[in-house]
Length: 155
Length: 394
Image (cartoon, rainbow over all chains, first blue to last red; front, side):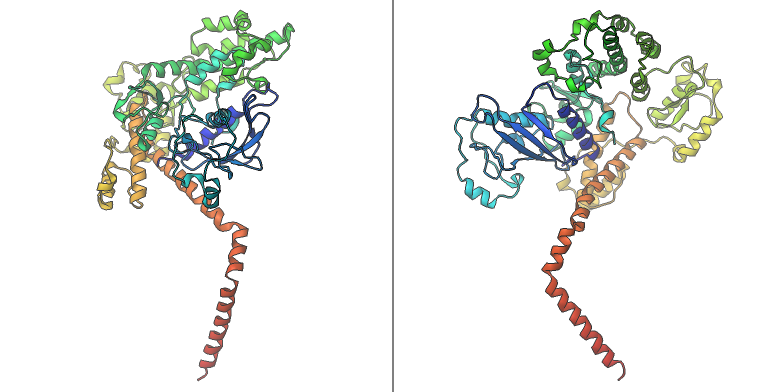
C-alpha cells in the first residue's frame, strides 16, 4: 500500500484551504466544515437539499483519514443524533456507497465525497432503513471491515 | 511542513476572474492537488497527473485515478506541452496576481467602485468558487471586463519578459502598494528562472544539489552535478560546456571550491549513478534474494521482507518519476528523499502506538483489571523474601 506522509499532510492542508474558500455568500451552505484541531479527523455538516425528502434536515459526517490517504478512502460515517433515514444508510451511520470503499480514487476529494453523499440523499424516493439494519448494527465495527455488496445503481 | 497560508491555491485569484481560477485548477494534479510535477498523460484516456502520483496509484490499482479506465505504466507518456505551459504560467503567476491586486486597488482608491474585490487576501471572505461564480458574477462589483480596461493589466500583458518583473510591477502599482508577495515568490519558487544578468557576483542555489554556487559557475556546476561528477574540481572546464561558459571560466572562485568540500565531502568520489530498478514479483523472491537485489540497486537493505518490499516499490516509483522529469535530480538526492520518506513513515506508524500506551484511561483500566493479580504477586514476593531471610542464617 503506498503511503507518503508528506503528500498526505500537504493534500489535507490544500483541501482544508479549499473547503474554507467556499462561497460565503450563501446563507446556509450545503456542506460546511466544522472547526477542529485535528487534521486527521474532520467533521462536516450537511444540509438536506431543498425540494428533496431531507429538505430542512441537518446531518453530521465524520471523516477519518487513514495513514495512506489519499490512496485510501477516508472512513466516512454519519454521526450525532440525526442520522438520515435512507435505504443505504444504517442506523449507526454507516453508509453503503461504493466510492467510500473499493471504488475510491485518489482523484476524489472531501468535497466531491460530500457532494456524492448529498446526491445520494437527494435522489432518495422513500425514507426507510436498509434491510437487516438491526442485525448489521449489532455486530458492525468499522465500515472498512465490511464486505459491501453494491446492488442498487438507482439511488 | 508548509503552513496553511503559504499554499498556492486557485482561490488566490479574485472571484471576478473565474477563468484564471479555472486555469489554475487545470494545472493541478488531481491526486496531490499541487501543480503538476513531471506531468504524464495516460494515453488511452488522456488524463494527466504528476509522474510520481500516478505511478504510486498504479502500484495500488492498475486504473486511471480519474476515470478508472484500466491502465498500466507502459501507457504513461510525458506531457511536454503541459509542462512548458505550466512553467511559464508559474513564472508569470506572482506578477499577474500583484498586477490584478494593484489594478483593483487603484480602482477602489478612485472611489468609482466599492472596494469589494481587492486581491486575494482581502477577497477571501467574498470569494466564490469557479463553478458558482458564473451564477453570482452579477453581485460582484468588479467584473473581468472592468479589469481588462485598467492600464496596469494591459501593460503587464505586453511585458512578456519575466526578468523585468520587479520593476514592471512596481511601476504599475499605487505608491502605497508594495508587491512583496510577488517578488518573494518569484525568487523562491522558480529555480528555473534565468539568473539576472546585472548581478555577477551573486551566488545561486543549484536546483539539483541545492548548494550555493557562484552565478558565473552555475552552468559548469550543473553540467558536472547532473552528470554525477564531482563539483569541487577546479580543473579546466570540460570541452562540452566550454563555449557557453568561456567568459565565466576565469572567474573560478576558490570560495565555491571550499564550500563544496565542506558541505559534501562524499561528492569527491567519481561518477555516482545507480542502476535502473525494475518491478519485482515479491512473492516469488526469498527475503535473502530481495535483500541482495536491494544491495545491488544501491538502496538500504535493512528491515524485514515487508519493509524491503515497501522501500523497493517506492524506490522504483521515485526513480522512474525522476527519469521522467525535465530536470532530474542526482541519485544521491533521490536516496536522501527515499530515507526521508521512510523516516516520515516510521514516525507516522510510531505515534499512534505511543498514544495508546500513554492514555491515562487505559493505564487505570489495566490497573483495575489486574488488581487481584498484582496483589497476589506482592504477597508472593513478600513471602519469598521472608523465606530467603529465614534460610540465610542456617
